[in-house]
Amino acid sequence: MNFISDNAVGVAPEIMSALAEANRGPSMPYGADDWTRRVERKMAEIFEHEVRVFPVATGTAANALSLACLTPPYGSIYAHEEAHVMADECGAPELFSGGAKLRPLPGAHGKLTAETLDRALKRDTTGDVHQVIPATISLTQATEAGTVYQPAELQAIAEVARRHKVRLHMDGARFANAMAFLGVPARQVTWEAGIDVLSFGASKGGCMAAEAVVFFNPALAESFGHRRMRGGHLVSKMRFVSAQLEAYLTDGLWLRLARHANAMAQRLTRGLSTTLPRLPGARLLHPVEGNELFVQLPASTIAGLRQAGFEFYDWPVEEGTAIRLVTAFNTEAAHVELLLKTVEELAGRATVN
Image (cartoon, rainbow, N blue to C red; front, side, top):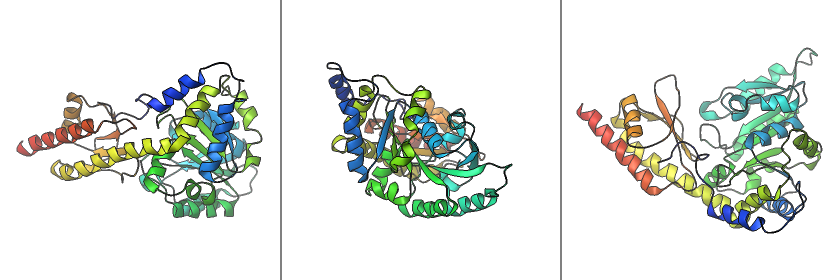
């Protein structure tokens, strides 16, 4: 019973069918195919804006290559201290940008605030040739804590970015989950909110291996094609990446799949809220707004869940033991109910003991 990650699940049937269909006959390579052209048009419709779209196979490539377009080698990138670009990409943003410096910043529940960014940018805008220059802010939507930036929060950050003349990048590995939670037009949390470039995630949402870099200012995309090729991320049979994205975007499939994942997370949240008070020190660590829950639990409860067959990651916290539970587009409601029943039983044993 998988709650370990939305990376651990399979491929949505609609995506697999699209791959089979794309396998009929030959097609031009390296993105000169009909699927890739249609994906760009679909993205323009979804965001209601002119865009340049570049499919890639991994989220790390999407983030690192897009940040390289926005940040010179002598520039700095500001991101939350727990952001994927900061903690989980093995220096790829530094590599592809030619040495840009990452500036980690704190923030409650995985979020940066306009105030925190303003202080950091004021501190680092020295004009001193010995120092790197502020160049880019990278925001994660939904965040590594499973929370979601509201349009007003993004707009406040964008105002700071404009004042300090830095660019805004969004890591949208779970962008669909954020949009399913917000229920607003995609434009409101991207280009209308000041985002220059979006790493649009699809692999976690139901695709096999497909992400897209979306430029809302086409002029910023001038070097991306060469960077993607030089970095080894221009897929020769690009139609198979683009076919996944096209199916994912067709008839709102991306949002339907995300809504299911979010609904399973909300069911877990409601169920746990009645049980956690009965377990010593147990609590939700962050608001649940996407498809991730971070739960502090007694070590005996965590061991009991694993013994019952549930899979999840431990998530270290200073206050004690915690786990991360991730729901996906195909999480079974029966597994959710069984997990809640198991926690209830373990809480009962803890009360008796």
